[in-house]
Every structure is written in structure tokens, then in C-alpha cells.
Amino acid sequence: MKTTIKHLSDTKVELTISLTPSELADAEKVALVKLSKDVKVAGFRKGKVPLAVAQKNVDPLKLQEQSLDDAVSKAVASAFIEEKIQALDRPAVEIKKFVPGETLEFTAEAEILPKVTLGDYKKLKASASEKVTISAKEVDAVIERMREGMGEKKDVNRAAKEGDETIIDFVGKKNDVPFDGGTGNDYSLTLGSKSFIPGFEDAIIGHKPGDTFDIDLMFPTDYHVEELKGAPVSFTTTLKAIKELTPATIDDEFAAQNGPFSTVAEMKADIKKGLTEQKQREITDKLKDDLVTQLIEVSKVPVPQILIEDQAKSIEQDFERNLMYQGLSIDEYLNTQKFKDKDEWIEKEVKPTAMKRVQAGLALAELSKVEKIDATTDELKDHIELYKKQYGNNPEALKQFDDPEVQRDIANRLLTEKTVDRLVELNKK
Image: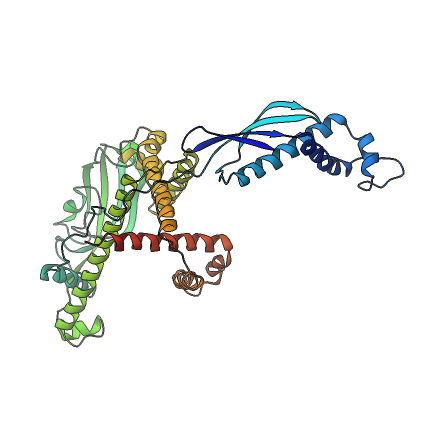
């Protein structure tokens, strides 16, 4: 077999492969074995016909086609392995010359894993921001939310005011016809939460339990439901109850109810520590993202189109699944973000994200090789255990971690994490 290589681009290669008569003869033998299983000859059981007999009874055209297929398949696999070229998809084959039993020449074109050339990854410009500081105001804001969460709610018979929790029934109508999603019964609404469209909560203020009234509003022009954008509507609303919230008192007893604290001072110190760790994680995560972005910028990272398409498809599926969990459709999202259609969203938002992810993956994979970073069996085992803890004692969910493919995915994530950590270490300022 003779192979010549032509690089069509940084991510695509074309191999021209020629086979000798002896290699074609070997392929014909393999093809004959396959076809002989279906040959019917008197005196022989099906599948037991000797090859010499089968050769005289097999369809010559079928034998030629099978021989050609087998010769090409074996030659393509062997050529890419011998030349140490990693194809990312099934090579596209084009026959250039074929004389049965004498010669075969064809081309095999495929996208390949590209060569990544790293820049000076030890002198990147990204650095962590200033030292983390937590103000007393931030701590007090957390405590205030805790006060409200543990506060006492009691029914009151007075006019509603901001901060009250109200229980309401409502029916929304457009042109006197109820519209989808516009009806609620025994709905709990805290006035001032801005959970409803502008004006709705304000219109409840001043009313007392038992009042029924109409709230005439206009939907925002950027509302996510097309038929309601900028539409005038009316909500017939009944205020059934008002609950007044009395926040809990901040004292040592309050502190003890919220953790292993003896005093308010201990509780505040713990809150400050938690906020500091959270903000530090955010700073570290941003530093990692910035360093990976700069690694891509200083390096040469060709991106195969097939990897972009695969990543874009994955992003699209994950995004639509997350929208579904939020009770939204992709069409509603496209409307709110002013995209003309789904194709425009994919071109402007999905593919650029896919491009960056693929480049990051390729660059970090190359960096892990250069820096000789690896994940040990024990590290992988510990990492899998961390994932398992997220599922508690759910036997069905835990089964997935026995899947070799899932384990490979976790191993890849672990290797990526270790490589990014190494990048941070190399660029400490």
C-alpha cells in the first residue's frame, strides 16, 4: 500500500491510497468468505460451501463490489493509523482508478484533530482582583433575610401595604376574553416583590380583605408572550387575606436557632466567613476563565467544523432543557432577546460560545500533554465519590457512575480542572 498525504487546511487532510494486486487478492478472499455464507449449492449445507466451489457460484459483480468495499475499508483504517492521523469523522472516499485484480487508487478526505501550538502560557496578563473584603452592610443584609424568613406572619384586617403577603384570586382578560396563564386562585403574592407586571402589585395596596376590584394595565412591549406584548388587559382581582410579617428579633436566641452559635457576634463572624469564601470562589473562577481566554489568544488553535457543530448542538439542547425547567419555550426566549429566528440565535449566540469551548478544550488538552498532567486512579475514584454524594441514596441515579463512558467524562473533567489549576499556578503574580 502506498499513501501520500495532502493537508487541505489545518483541520482537514486528504490521503491518496494505492493498493497492489496482492492486497486486492487478499481483499477478494475476505469478500468471498463473506459471500459464501449465503451461496446455495446442491449437496452442501448453507454456509458450509467450500470456497473453491463458492467462487464458481457467486455473482461476479457482487464479489467485485464486496472486494472493493473491503479493500477500501481496511486500507483507510490502516493508512490513518500508520500515519498517526486522528480522523474526527468517517473519511469521504472517492475512487480514482480501479481495475479488478490489478490496481486500486482512491482518496480519503476527513477532518482531523489539529495541531495546537501553544503560546507563552507562563506569562499571561490575567490576575486576581483586589483582596476580598466583606462590609458590615453585606452581613446585615443576610441577617435581614434570615429575620424575614423566621418572622411571624399573622392575618390582619386593614388596608394592604408594601411588604404584606396577600392571598388573591385573579382572572386576566384581553378584550373581555380570559387569556392563558392569566388566572390564579389562592395565589400568595408579597407586595413589593415585583413578581407581576408593573402596576399590578401597586394596585392592590390600599384594598382590604374581601374587596373585589379590576386592575387595568398594559403588558410591557418586550413581554415574552407575543400576543400579549403591549396589550391592554384587565385583571378582576379578589383580595382574600392579608398577612403582616413581623421579622424575628436579633438576639442570642435567634443566633442559636440558626447554627451552633452562642452569640450574635459568633453568627455574624460565620456569615462574614461564608461570604468571604463565596466571593473568593467567584474571583478565582473569573481568573481561571480569563487565563483560559488569554491562553487561546496567545496560541494557535485551529478548530474543526465538526467539533463546533457537535458542541453547538449540545449547547442548544442544554439551553432548551433549562428553559423548559423555567417554564419557557425557545420561541419565548428568542422574542425577548430580539432574535429574528432560531437560526440567527444559533449563528450569533450559540456558535461563538461553541467555538470558544472547543478552542479551550483543545488548548487545555495540549497544555496537559506539555506539562505532563495526569489524573491518577485514586484521584478519579475520589472525584466519582464526590459526584455520587450529590445523588444521596438514589440507587437508580448512582448506577450511571458504573458506566465506563460516564467515568471517562468525569476523568476528562478532572484532567481539565487540574490543567486549569496548573495554569493559575504558573501565572501567579
